[in-house]
Image (cartoon, rainbow, N blue to C red; front, side):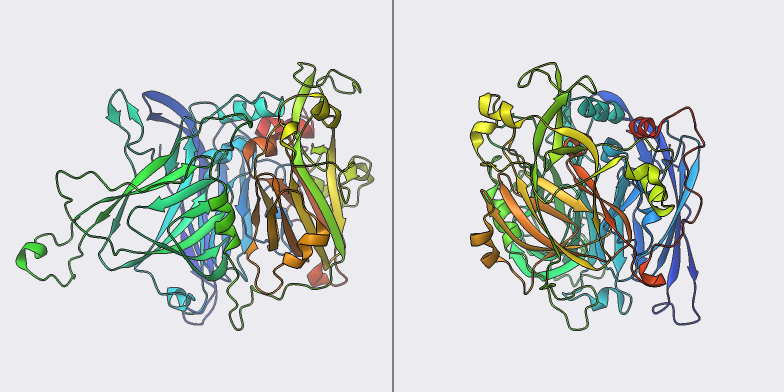
Length: 617
């Protein structure tokens, strides 16, 4: 049930089209449609009848308007993942934190600029699990020179590659299951650009896969996005190499590799040269990375697309027979299946660790987006990431722990699991209007965990006396306040509490300098010396490795309320999140402007704010 897309470009300046800023306007109609895969029809929530949803293409400095028409039965918000929203926190798109949800049969218009950024970002629903199908690419190109001004060879084509998952279930129900501690829901397949590929079949008929056409000798820019809810992925194309040139809309020193590692929330830009023998076809494989035992073993599925060579009509053919193939795909030898790449072992996490360790920022003269790493740190935090439990009956202080029906599993930061306050408006609205109602409902995220222990001890994964002693936690609206301009250093430490997952931590409204990563427990006396203060990669989503740590630094220079959370859906639903509050500066251009419209959620007084949030999920 495709809906029409309105895409209008207005020139705002009398300057030349290339140099002038533009207004990019689109309409997103959120609705449900039935899709059939694996012999089963599933009701799916999508935008404009597409999966993935429509791509937004802009130029650095443009203004963007997106009209969201919610024709689905779910509450809805859209988050513009990686767009900094400088002085514009109101449209960041987090329900009950920066805005009220868009109710069914209601509309909302997002207005924002994309100043100071260029590269690959994406957009997605921020009503948690619905982002599994409500998502799309967001491309920002350079202002002057377009693709000719990239700090790498100009590509023949730019191609979004969106890795996702296929779910044969109601994603709203799945999220509710996670909130209430039921963790058994799993995807049925993985996807590339919405297609399952020929590793999956329905009664013997293989699923359709994505096909990437390439011309011999041409260079292609793959804009890779991990929109999956559950897994980090490896991506490899048999017979081809990647040159990584950017991540999260920040350029990196070109890094040549035969494999990409990308976690949920991240983007990676990589050049691929079509230099393999053109009489063969090749598989592009996306394979999820699994945590090894004794972690719980969760089913996950690889998927693959096909790379086919073709000749364009203006290709310099050497003979008439080759010319006959003009403007169509080169036909592979009939007796040959596509060449499949050799993929890492399913439990291989070290390839990902080394991939990330090889990335450094590209220092370009006059590059506005790359400032020097602040040397002076104003606030330091050590944040542990793990699981715990709360008593199932609210208000109950004591209950049986371990493998017990009396508790609910939750995810935590420094042993506190995030939940929304009981407000009649968004948290940002209450904060902006200086209402005392919110102050009494929040707790400060502490500088460190309540107790120190061997965070990466694998004995904590199964239930036992040592684990049960550390398991009790609490729920609260967790916030952390920073003065405007403060330099903040955060060390994220993964823990072994019940599981040893990695954690892709995403900070809204800011980029982070990724100073160092390591395995085991962070030790400042040893590990500070390893910090890269010269050219660290800059990301909005940073993967904290399994049973390891990452040190990041950022400047709190964007006033408002910004969500910091794990981008694994089950961790987010279970509460691995906090709100970072950046206070106003001393001038008008360092202070949050008034909201574009009054943001009270009182249009449905039958629901409490927490119920808005839960209903949205």
